[in-house]
Amino acid sequence: MDLIVSHPTGSEVVRDYLAGERSVESFFGSHFRDASAYVAKATEVDSRFDGSARERAVEAIIVPEGGDQGRLERFVEEGGYMVTTGQQPALFGGPLYSIYKAMTAIRLAEALESRLGKTVLPLFWVASDDHDWAEANHTDMVGIDNELHRFEVQAPTPEKAPSLHRIPLGSDAAQVADRFLEHVPSTEFSDAYIELIRGFAPGATLPAGFHQMLQRILGPYGLFFTDAAHPALKQHSAEWLLRELSGSADHEAVLQGTADQLEAAGYHLQVPIMEGGVNLFMEGPSGRERLYREGDSFRLRTSGQVLTEAQIRSACQEDPSVLSPNVLFRPVVESVVFPTLAYVGGPGEMAYFAQLKSYFEAHGVGMPVVYPRWAATPVETKIRKVLDKFGVAPESLRRPFHEIASEIAREEVPGDIRAALGKLRGAIGGGVGELQKAAAALDPTLKGPVQHLRSQSLAALDNVEKKILQAVKRESEIMLSQLEKAQLHLYPAGKPAERVQNPTYFLARYGGAFLDAVYERFEVNLD
Image 1: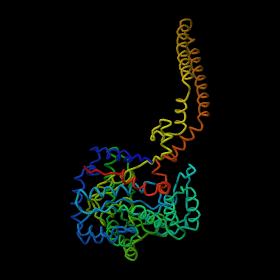
Image 2: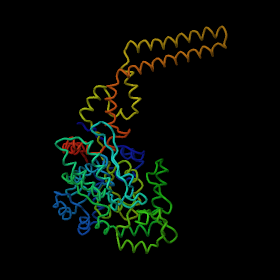
Image 3: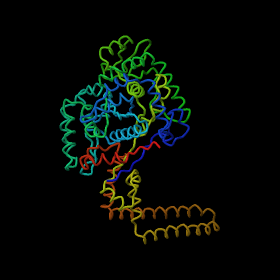
């Protein structure tokens, strides 16, 4: 199996950041390829984190089974740092890119540890307080039958949208797992991953199954975890969430100022700034609800319930988990709880980090260096053989298949037919040109009918050519079906496999060798 590795691109602001354009310096600060940026960030982190602050950070860290607890002790003793990344939970581990984000963070932490001479921990934040059930409750996989399948569990209470960690999986989870496993390759490696899929069981939660799966497969590479609902994380961040509540109007102005600058520079906003919106969610009657300012009070967006600041503070004191940050405030919370040097993000996350530099500074925190995650397209041997057979590059399969099939068919048309078609097309053009010249000399009004003749002749020839291509396609039907299956594996549903394909397919087929290959290819060079 081959891996085609690159940094995924995204919006224009992300593409300019990857290219090191000066136009984005004011939004991102130092570039991720600038080794001195991490040294400067370490100095800024040290100004805020002493030994006791790092000890508090450790309280919110989850060590996977078999993980090296001693690294946490060295982290505190040496005054170490972290490289963070994360993802909301998803059924059966979600798509491949969650693993890619984690592995990039692992490799970047190793490179920074070597460079700085201090322990640097890779940390994966599981966003279990996310409430988008429709985004988390399914996964897709091209299975052993070479077909794309979607597997989805139902919400026990579809009329509400609480945080994912508050939602137990329903009785259908076991049946969905059974259907999923029918499409997983059966190999000597399968049993270990079947066990992990079974962890998404009725009564459990998506975050619990997601944790178990990622910790088991990525813990051996030195990855540590935290959870948005971790009691220690909630305790240590509560003060900052309440500060955000009190200062929401000022912080909205800061974010709007950056938004205006981005748009003035010709960039689009990843996250719109909502007037009156507080960058916090609160567990309310309708689940996890966005807070909005309403006079001197605050309104829950969905239920419409109005609360005073004192009531919100009281509820948070009673249960710190009732408040949670939104997508813009979460990175700030992460950086005040953990000594973060860099955040590893995908294109969407990188785009919203472009909105946050001044917002971080408004909280008295420097924004971490934004490092783009690696992307990898797995190309199995059976797929490579098909590509080589047709002389097709993997990236060319991003196009609609009918375009690819037509192109292949044109190349398969026998040479004598192509030559005859070309000769006939030239003859029509030349003959009509001569006729038009001669007829115009006799009567200028004949120019129109002659042009009409040319159009009819070429249209008839195009129709013949289409029929020839259809005949070639019928002759090449088996070969084209092989190419279509290759496209499905590389770009299922027209998207890169990493955004669709569940990792269990590759884990069951290749075992740990798949993860080892990803680890080896995701090299980070700070020189």
